[in-house]
Image 1: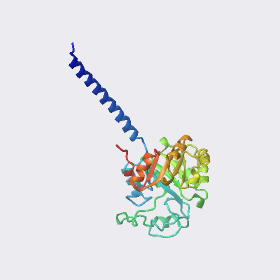
Image 2: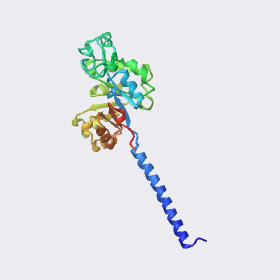
Image 3: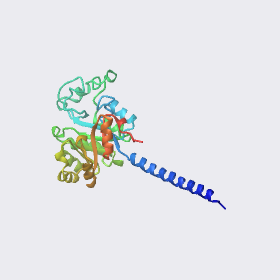
Image 4: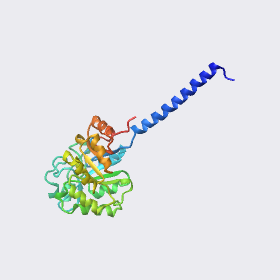
Length: 278
């Protein structure tokens, strides 16, 4: 039989075991909570490290294990869908002029890398089909329709490229389409009903209860600039069965803020800022 002191020691040991196991479970739960999946979206590729919207930036994002690359789609004068952010080529190439006024050959002959660093000299402006063929199946692709009002019919063209590759029924929501142009997104939703649609905004007027309800009729994501993100907004978006992705993270502080807000995705120039926190 156990004596009193042995029973006491056994009791203490048992209590410590329970406490330790309890703490283990608590720690596991907290860790799981901290490591809640947030999609890491490389903004124009890993554009903090390589020239935006180039193969180098997209390859870097894949190497950094980003969940998505974000790309900007526009159209050349002769009808080629190309990946570039600005409506002009002046900032990110050695050329000048509007994207829509330059032929594909003229666009393709530009150097889209040297402005970032000499090592990227000779980078080309990619085409939409090149990006789809190179990256679908490797990483998700968040397609931004950039100024679609400048390019009548571009919605049908983008939809056609996706349908041709059976990407109109994406697995695990690995294709998403977004724009600041809400009418364009309504159109994309009707053309590609199985593809998630996102609306971009930096305006608080698009975060009212009525605006959010209007978005919910055709959109799956509300994607605000991080300066207007609040816990209340995140809750409202989620209550309407939509997700929220926020942009553009260029500091660890901004990434940490959005992680605390429990957004669903963070769009960042630096994918390494959006890592699961221990």
